[in-house]
Image (cartoon, rainbow, N blue to C red; front, side):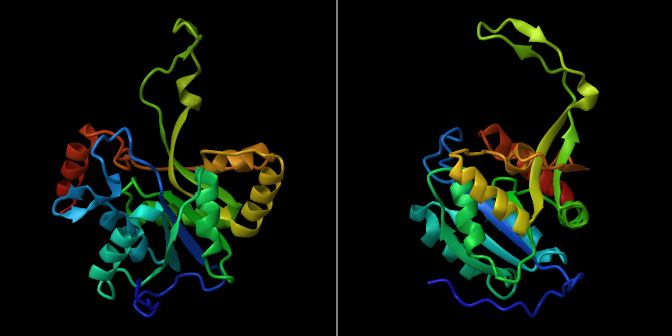
Length: 247
């Protein structure tokens, strides 16, 4: 069983806003091809998700953390959290099971957040190299504008192709951003849009798209290229090199 967690260790910068981080770890990790959740891959001797949670734990803008995972992984996540409890992970409120889609998984996480929560910081658990500074920047912008996401300028020339893989057009690279997480939203607005999307049977793989669908502006905050997402085995070596450079 998950132990009870206190909020005594970390002070909160803005006591008028209550930010709940929802860390989504419910994917099947099929592209990694290791037969287990990529959240449990060891990076420098610790599971990848350790670094993810640690960054949100150390963020002064985040009040609580909810983890969403596959039901079959819940015990492993709870064991990791309990192993680092009180010395590191005092903000983790709950570990909940995900749904059939990403939006359902996020909704399950939101349902476990505190009632006084005003903003959501939704993050892909596989982005284990997120820094505290980038969390602070995105949360600050999300509180200020109601919707924000980390992103980086696209370095490569991007081509839009036809179904036969022939080039259709080349968008202006200066207008393109590779969107990362966390993505931060006003909680009340997010729930409103999520409810309307559910009634319309619309599902989104990206939380920004939910706000875009309902005509809302989302502000992109400059992120770091090191905020990579563990997707294939090549990313494991790169992630360890990035972590080593931070010590």
